[in-house]
Length: 321
Length: 295
Image 1 (cartoon, rainbow over the protein chains, first blue to last red):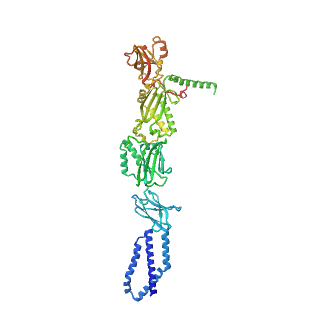
Image 2: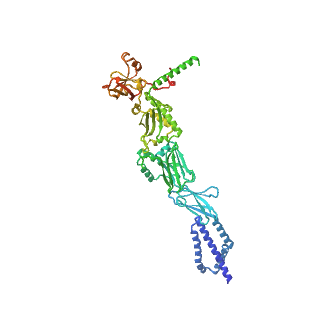
Image 3: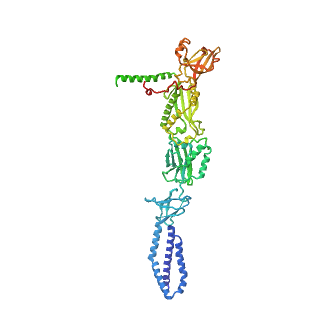
């Protein structure tokens, strides 16, 4: 009696182990490879269907056929419920689950994102890059370790951000939420700053570092325009309206010229990674004589395009202040 | 080179030098003014490095001296900063409305004449209109000097008249001991010929300040006079010392001779040119000796 009960229980335990493997594997594959729950539902559905139709099937089949089916089932059961196979499947799944992982990148940003890259600070080599269609999700499959692996996620217009990738949960990153937007900075010199730039003056913007000389973001000279550091952006009409209001006290001639210089910024390639929100940025314009003509000092906020007026050191009393 | 050729060359140089020196010697009697140019408008000041600014100011001073010498001969201008003359004509490029509260606007040339013990200052002429600082062309040493030369060449009579009226007319052109008062009604004989100071005798006017000796002492007597030339009919009509000294020189005649006191009661204290137009017909422009045509 005891032997019979043990003989019956062992296949049931193995079957449960196999079923648990299937469920676990399905969950893992769904999470990391995007397989949907359809697979799990299918497995469960088949099991439920077989369980429910089995009593009716028995009454329909002749004892001979029942014997044949039972034999076939026993044969299949022997194969799938073979203990070494079950152990192999579970070990394989465990190894895969502890060393393979995924990074899922999606975009919360309003503007389209061209591409996303993943780099590994712990090893040299090319970055993994994938194009990102509008509203789509990008998945990278990478090796990791049970204790985690550092990675960096970067995308044009966003601040490159470091994460630790753990095997089981993987990493889900939303651009604009987990990876901050790198604001494009529109440095806008005032009247005297523009004149100094025309006369071979120089512009320089840098990230303020209280403990050092700072990190230069961009610099140029002899260009009489505003400067855009970061991703190119169309200037919103609301910003133009603000500028018009700012110049309301100037003559029409001066106002139109200033707007023209501001509306057509010179695109400056950043010399370092784009500064993110919260970074303190300074900029100055020096005349050819070396005299400081205009400067600005601000802590970057959130936003894709930040208007940064570079204020004249000695403002024009005739202008609106 | 043969001896005769060398002699000819020396003679030619000597003649040319003499031509240059003689008018210079005559001009040496006229008041000497040191000219200086300064850049103060921030737009221009900031456009030059320290060395460039010195170059610009020195070169601009030379341009100014050339322009002034082309238009005035009753004073002598020099760019030599080591010149000991106390008279200084300081031309400054600055905002029209100066001071920290002045709005950005027109930039022009201001003139300060230090003529001890007095100083006069005025806005002479616009250099750049308001708003033109946003023009695309950059200010460099070369463009600035070219622009200044064009500006000085383009000055109109009214600009030069303003310079005379507001500044140069405050400089007495003759040592009072060298001026003679003679004739009835009284006239003033000036120790320059009209050609020497290149004054157009049709339009030139002088202000002669005098002290009239009266029974009570002295009384100031200012007279506006036109410019004539002293051409006595013969030496018998005037004292010989006046004839020999002032023949063909300027004879200043009062515009309104009525009420003028006798010549011997007047003591000249200053002679000022209040209206001056360059007599281009009788005066050639200054030309250095080595560019003179062959003599």
